[in-house]
Length: 416
Image 1 (cartoon, helix red, strand yellow):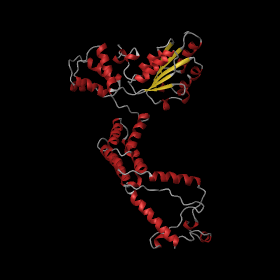
Image 2 (cartoon, helix red, strand yellow):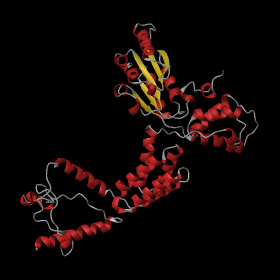
Image 3 (cartoon, helix red, strand yellow):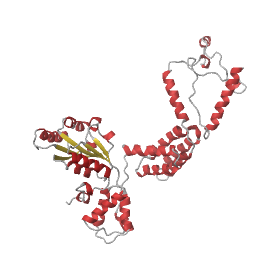
Image 4 (spheres, helix red, strand yellow):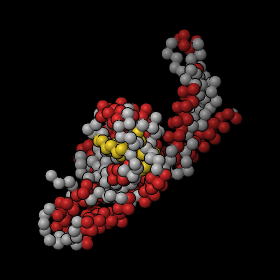
């Protein structure tokens, strides 16, 4: 079987690589110094990680060994290392590991002593965030290169390279633009789509015909990985920043990635308390209603209720006063958990408890002139704390007035 088009057209020099100019210039300097460094290339599929890694590794006068983390074991690694240590190759050894995140802890650890003593240089590629996918010990010995998706201009270069080396694409300009658009910065996906079209042996396809024979690149989304947390963070912060349009965008990105909508509503419930709170008490009700609506209707109908909640939260007045008050109260409560409540607010259901002073001096607020006694409800050993400080925004503006009202009443009661 012939190799895929993406493999046949793999760049043979840095000059042929699309994008990543800054990173390539740095690598050229390392190559010029003739001292290979262990490097990890991290980035999304189809951005050129493997290509750049192999070009870099092969630029040195060294024995180059390529292994896949999918098929290799600790035994394979030890065999390569033993051959390198025994001088079998008479030149330094560079090991390239594709998809290194698939190696378990023991496999990753097997590289450490040989990286430490200089027996090997390790060059690896991964689509997973190295902070989570690699052991800290191994990661600390690698220079991490973070590569991004290819730009539109870079994708045009990939397409031009195909036409230069293989043949011209008999497609309308609109169809070519569409191919680049649906590939979303993934060169491998673009070449795969071109390969599919060429297998049809059809002449001059327009954009509608191309749409029939191609498929959009699947959304890069891992419900347990970095993209999952990156996108929910983007949604949360867009709502906090009162941007309904960006908020809707990130919501749709998550739904496009087949995220569980109920996971999203759980975060929105958090947002309504953490970032809005009592500035708009309706926010929590709106989200809970959206959650219930989705549970009844499911997808796609119920997703509209979630979108409605997202826009409402984004445009709601923002206050983290409840969040900060709760955190302060937890801290003080934890540090003073040994202090009992003041005696006057303790119930006295027995004679002994009454004799001991339980409930003595308690004033029933409803019996006072203003329905407010102003008594102390903190432990007597603890100064009265101010945890909740509402903002002058939304409904909290009214709550602030109420606090000032009760403070004034307390001052009057104290004077009397």
